[in-house]
Amino acid sequence: MPQEIDQAALDQLFFDARTHNSFRDEAIPRDLLERVYELARWAPTSANCLPMRVVYVIGQEAKKKLRPALIEGNVDKTMAAPATAIIAHDLEFYEQLPRLFPHTDARAWFAGKPKHIETTAFRNGSMQGGYFILAARALGLDCGPMSGFDNAKVDEVFFAGTSVKSNFLINLGYGDPASLYPRGPRLSSEEACRFE
Figure (cartoon, rainbow, N blue to C red):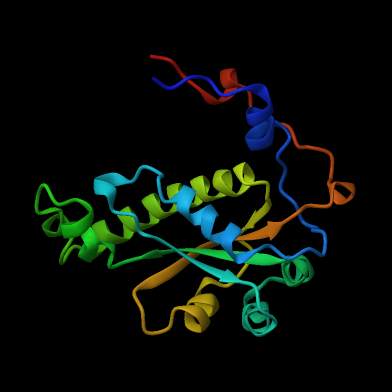
């Protein structure tokens, strides 16, 4: 039976975690990046569809390819980040359903239904992306998730000829707390929630 995690874990995942724009000049081991995905893949998705795809941009050549797609305010921090994860979703995710959801013909729910495919891929890939952030934080990394880029350019450079589309970016590394802005407020449960 699940138990409430301790305060230190809650602090690392939520209360002390911040969106970082500046990182220490310290490489992230590839096996740690692989472990982030290995945790994030356990996110719940409808019919276990798992549409999220990730490209880790870590090399200088890859960073040069990403740079023209970024808005001006995101260039310096992304070029300096040890890694940037392109969180994307595969519009042909349903081709994997015979393996991932074998107890029924779930592929038939999507084949030939582009609007349903797009909505399902985007929704579930976004949910997996949120879990990706929590997985990175759980493994000791700081995150700088962002939009602020040209999706079409990213897709052309990193996903040409595929059925994969970019959603958002996450800069990853070991954050520099000295560069953080004061934490922004959040809506209270009274403002954001209803109980009926």
